[in-house]
Length: 365
Image (cartoon, rainbow, N blue to C red; front, side, top):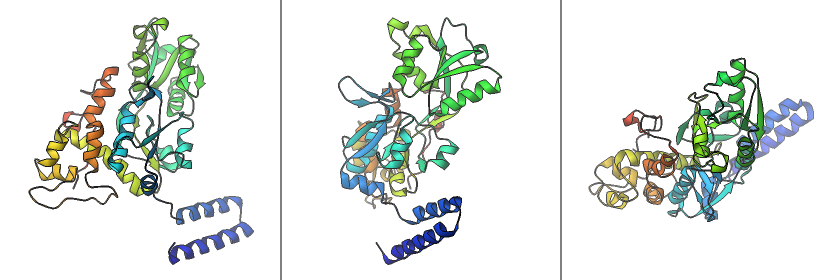
């Protein structure tokens, strides 16, 4: 540790000692926070590189986004982003340790260092950004909360659901949005909360609740695989109303800019790859002969004999190449995992900005 850091630490400890001796509990807590900020945390990027694997917190029970298959493999939209980050860091998408997490345990797991990165259909909100000491990177999927009911229930709108019992995951923005919506409409309802999806779905199949609310992507996932013994997909309908804005994306720990930048620009890189027409099947050819300087910068190769642009992210300049080779561009990931659920991309917020959507990458320059 450098002398300046030792001196800062010495001053911080002395200050804390004085505060403990003559100040209130509130003042003590504030000084502790200042000391924590002054003491530099180790870079997660270096920790991951030294360890040789990326610990990624995921869902293991949400088809399309994150699921553990019968063969013991993880797959899904969010899983591919874990692979992309690992490929960017190591040049090898297999160097990921997946850590399944419940909605209520996910933030503590990230904050404690149990995982390096959280990619688990998590909504970006002001309070989470402020209070949890985590940083949200760029949004990977623009979602919105919905309500799923039985087709023969007679419910056509939320206003029809006076007195209904609604299944919802606890510790989520979904639970809060549900209460906001029913309270604002002056409707009485009973929330039936669960920590994980399996007991929630069991309750819904047993008709212990009249509605099931979560992100519409999640409802599409659960409806698509709803068992025939319980009526199958056709027995369910997702109401037209969207209750909220739910931007989903990866999270890193606060004040961890080196690792944050890698994750952030992997997301942007896969978006730009789609816009530039670079796919998992043609990325090697594009890297060998880039069409323009922008493509060369994206792929970390020279253009017309020029210099390689190294953005100094602490990984090889070809990191986006590795990510694309591993999982494809944004559109390939979407088409593989989300289109089969009926989550049509055309005309949605998840279309490229050139097609009227919100999916957009800043320039690689």
